[in-house]
Image 1 (cartoon, rainbow, N blue to C red):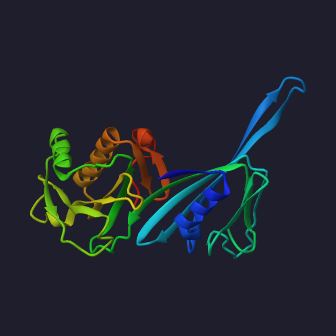
Image 2 (cartoon, rainbow, N blue to C red; image 1 turned 60 degrees about the vertical axis):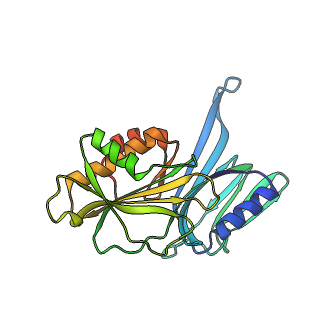
Length: 270
């Protein structure tokens, strides 16, 4: 899900789509400044300022992580008193006047930005119930094509990679029923009889806007090298086959950059 925000109509779409990020919270905030060398003065001059805000929130049975990249920043402030937390959001306010976008991320104006335009990107997944087994790692992928991976495709990819697995479909449950496609557990064939304690839970779902697909991989159970290998292999094969965006925690990674990111950051976090 990506959308350019430049006009009043774009702002209306943003507020309707996100519900104003009501009851969400800011997880990351970054500022970058670009400077150019001025040959006449012999000095570096400020050319552009960009602020990126990542917000996690829940809406319509989905957990969403949104990244709002605000370009051409002309006014920006962030203020947090000792003991206070300005990361929590009630509902943001926004307006477009004189060709500028203005965002108030809290009622007190402690997080405020004015910019020329913004770029919105989001990855969403259904709310998941608490599992009786510990969750060791989670990886989410939102693809751009209408058809995503099938169970048979996953099993074939694992077989070709030398890690054959068995598949057990999960019991149907009432969670975003209109979006759910299928769900089940992948267990390496080399696992012992207590295999239910080590599995990769796979859930495939559709997106609420009707474009693309989503898939969530979760390593469940006790720490197990083979299960971690299965999750990593599937993530690699999915990003090689499909265009889209990966989500690890609240970090979005373009699918084409996934293998580089994993090589640099190591094992997936919970």
